[in-house]
Image (cartoon, rainbow, N blue to C red; front, side, top):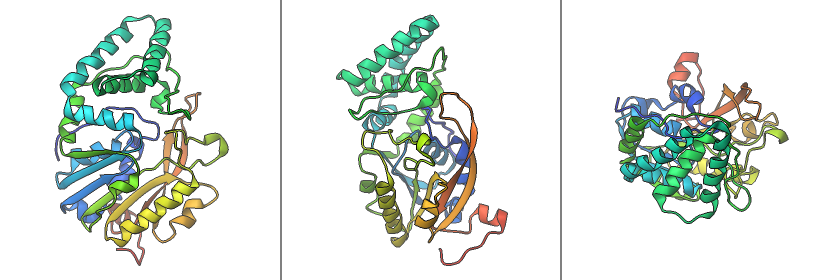
Length: 305
């Protein structure tokens, strides 16, 4: 067990509620202390990342990636210059909390406008990114086709800046390599010591639940099929992967990942503007067995290592 750190961002689709289901499905060799290279090609809010870094000292190196350049720049600033970032965040926080609720709407739109149009240094970008993440609706990150952040404010919301957690995240990130761009680029050197957690933008379970506006590029069925090909390459190279996604009623992933172990899990999610929380079915796919979950359920399969 190492120093505990929690994600410094809120994130729609974040894995806080899925952590237990993921943790009991980690490879037993990893749990037993095998030196491991850990890779997250779709890091997002980092729930799984900071869980792994906080709990397992046998992770010898870490790579994270995301297509969202603003997000990866924020991770880099948290890692490299938290002493400059925290005062910039505090300045925004103090102003926000000094305003009447009705005036916070104006401040939010002002910061969002600057975030979308103004040239800025990375510390300012990271501070604004964190501020918008904490004051927008439900921690949602969404871009329009022009690549501009376009989420509405969460009215009247108060937030807390957890300085000690920021510093703990910064210390953990010292051993993390951060990249921006195509997830495939960080999956080129897979070995038997590699563990990859794949958490792509989820495939919508219905037309009304579609959320593929995380970046202006989108992530549709074509990209899901390409990701399956990449999972096959990880498997062929002897690496281990775990993947999460939605459990689509049309059986898309049941067919696509039929060669691997597919577990169904029930998770409470909230994305709608009504802030109602509903249980939804998700899948966890893996190319190995013999996990704690398998032992708990006496679940056995053949043909996988």
